[in-house]
Image (cartoon, rainbow, N blue to C red; front, side, top):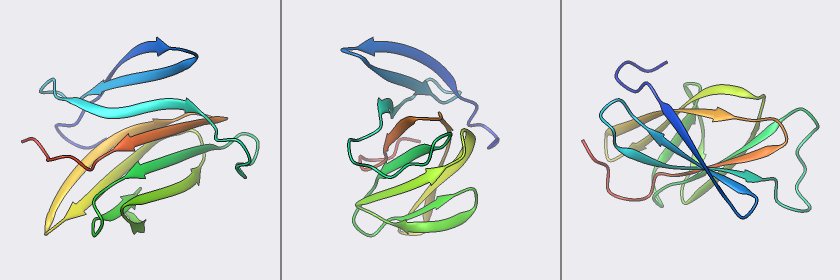
Length: 115
């Protein structure tokens, strides 16, 4: 995991979907949601979907590999913990996320970054 970015999950079920309130060690709430897979999507059984919302020119990296640019990146992944990083104008915002099999993990990294 990323130093200083240990996560704590606080589930809050809302109308059949679970908003996972993830906080970093300093208590800053992160925009992470655990949702059903979208209808018509092609996600193999036993895999999960990571959906990242980022700024138009932001680079999105998962497990230290660039996987795309904002404003939206979708990636099918094995379930488990993954290292997400968004690069914006030379700065990086790392985040550890949990991807669940048969679910969509939606992460919103568009807003202003807090330090």
